[in-house]
Length: 371
Image 1: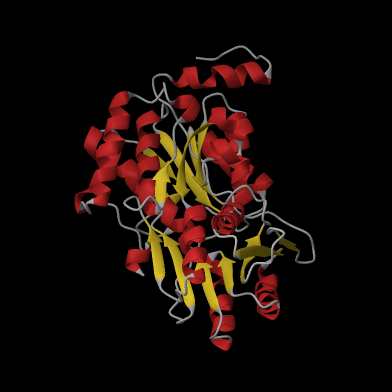
Image 2: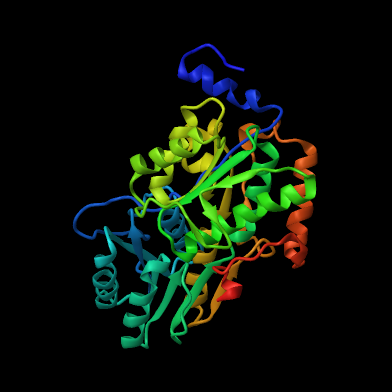
């Protein structure tokens, strides 16, 4: 059922109600965008001298990427605000070649705790940490066996499973899609969970929703191979839309914004965001974002900094639904569109995941538990 053309503001206002019978959404990981050529450092901190220097090295995209880096930096600031004896700073990476120089520069700066953001940086964190055993390090979205490196990981398949179930419940076309920025575990873990959430809905509700873009068994699918190419992400999303998908779940950093804009330009399409609540990070597009599969990065990083201050070195953390390390974001503008029945089912599934119910079919080779 079409609608006459109208100003964008009006179309956005009525869009949720056009999905009253079956909401839709899919959106991805907004983590990395290009920054300046030279790595930058910014320090915050009070006027009083702090004795503990907590330093962060961003992945590409900069500290204000509206997602992964920004959430991690918020955790650094939260730790600083909680303990005025902690001073936080960061160095920005514009690409992978900046990782090692930024980590080494942090060592030279006398940092007491150095956090490397992004699984792609883990090898560099390990190498620098092994050469500096008296300094505590952390790797976010990576696993390390180096004694002075604290591993921060997330079983993001759990929150993505809920997102997939919600997408299957809300699709009108019977087809949804997911795609990634790069084929690496922190990305494919979301895609695995999303597909399996759809599959479980098909089994439980006798539906036949199709997922485009990712084959869990073959571990093969669609990627832009670039976390920053929003135009490429939009083009890929439009291809899936042309194939009938009405919910798009991009796991691709800033490239994922292309999926959100593609959905926004199509009245019958929604998106689901990743890592953070898309209605907070992409507020102007909230009316096209059904929900988000979140990682609670800020809390995990804050706790890691506070633990390092207290003398904890090494160890690991895995964010799950049980410890609120991952979660499904609120439906926001689609709160009245998603049925009470679906909401109750999502609550039940959440509890079953927490209890380890294998009958759900949730299993990802990229899960920290499978590492």
